Length: 266
Ligand SMILES: [Zn+2]
View: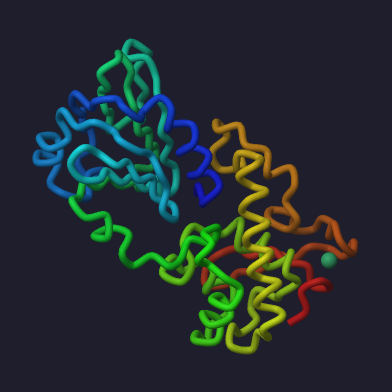
């Protein structure tokens, strides 16, 4: 599933070809892609809108329009691309935005879990999200407060989008290894120094992954390279890059979790 670095990579790629373009109309082949409003109202309201900005909030792509905001969540298998209007149709391009310069923004989604929203107030969709981990407003002290106020294991806490936005299974494991914290450690036992290490680790992990254009792992077509530098994710049975001990894989709340039993003591 694409996480913050992969979504950010897509946003950066779409900004130049999308900003300033007019959406002439949308083709909706899979009505349930449209989470809000109804597919019919969506098709009506999207017509003639100018794309003013392309940004990201958590794992959502956020398109500022002349009236309202278009949000897209890629979920498990979604991808967005700009192609020439006469490019061959793609089997899984269930929602297509026809732009005013003979190009199309195609939302391809083989597993159909992705969702599209058109709202007046962006908070209707993103209001429950936790802080953006790369924002200046996300501080070490802020993270320490979050950890103290929850009594949960670190791994599921980091995956909770209402706690911190944008982190998924890959970058939670990577961040915890870099911070030398066990994924099952109770959040309220984390010391201020450890919280600062985790804060620094989350930011380094995500910004390095963005520099490498994310990871090409479940979705091979994006060209990211971060998978070549994974510390623990997907490396069960291989040696830890720091200490040489064998990386372990366990299940925490149904999610596979990778860690080094030596670097990340419980
Ligand atoms: Zn290790």
